[in-house]
Image (cartoon, rainbow, N blue to C red; front, side, top):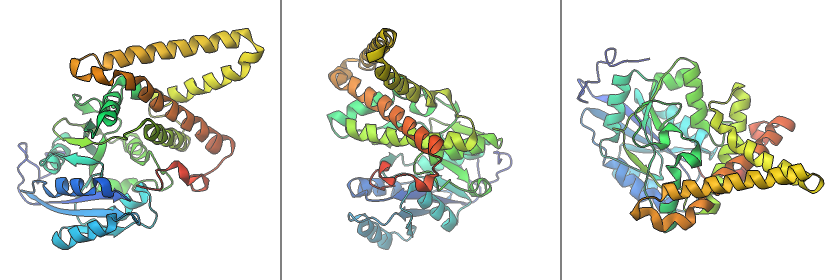
Amino acid sequence: MTTAKDNPNAGAAGDFAAPVKVSVIVPCRNERAYLENFLASMLRQERDGLEVEFLIADGMSDDGTREILQQYATRHPELRVIENPGKFVSTGLNAAIRAARGDIIARMDVHTEYAPDYLRQCVRVLGESGAGNVGGPARTRSRGHQQAAVCLAYHSPFSCGGAAFHNTAYEGPADTVTYGCWQKSTLEKLGGFDEELIRNQDDELNLRLSRAGGKIWQSTAIQSWYYPRASWGAVFRQYMQYGYWKVRVIQKHQLPASIRHLVPGGFVGSLIALAALAPFSRLASGTLVGLAGIYLTANLLASLWTCRTPGTRRYLPRLPGIFMAYHFGYGYGFLRGLIDFGLRHKSGSQTFTHLTRDRKV
């Protein structure tokens, strides 16, 4: 892995001895609602000391996204639109990596806005940390009351098991980071993203990197703001997908990256099993009531704690349902993945694709 000492392009203060060639890769499909804000944020990136190209892999958009991209590409020669006939995130990322001319690859996503120094900080931290992949925490922004409540839940340890990238104050080693920045040679050695995976392809890549001896580093200096899903149903479907495809990642590597990935599936599976046994067993019935009661109490306490400051109290009525969308979505998806990948021995290519967000990337 490259260190600051080994990399003549990176200085301790973020100044560069020679232009660093950076390729920004962006998977995109049917993102018209967020696209122009994203493009404005992307094109505002500070480029002193950097030679930057932007590669947007369009997954055959049919909502006007492609036309907007073509208009911007005409006005900004540093922006190139890459075909992604596979339509999924992993196929789009790999297509962009293959087309990239830069020595450093930085990923961006459309549902996010970026600090003007985002790329410069990525390159600086990559050089100084000696890590194989660097990124920032997942800060959030919202449009409207419901999305603001989802943002609150997103940063609670109760929703996602305390993953480091949900903690905006954490800096240090992590098992995954938001988006990522790598030497292109690192991605090539790893073989790129796993195109079998419709979701969790970034987690799986980071797992391979860690097990190959690489380091993943989260820096608070790398700043971006993600717009999460804006409804209970959308959060449920998103986390159902994450739970479902996490099973395939665990199956592939024969070990979960973290115990937190197993908890929602175990909880939802226990509820289902106890509910099935409850008509025939008082023990099962009592255990079901007790387990549900413990969960509802924990949910309420977590909601109260999350909304403990005056500015957040108005979101309290929404939090329990949002937490349930996270937990039951992931848990149900995980159990369904166990059935498909474990019992039915399906491969990723044989699974139903409507678990994805209408095949958006």
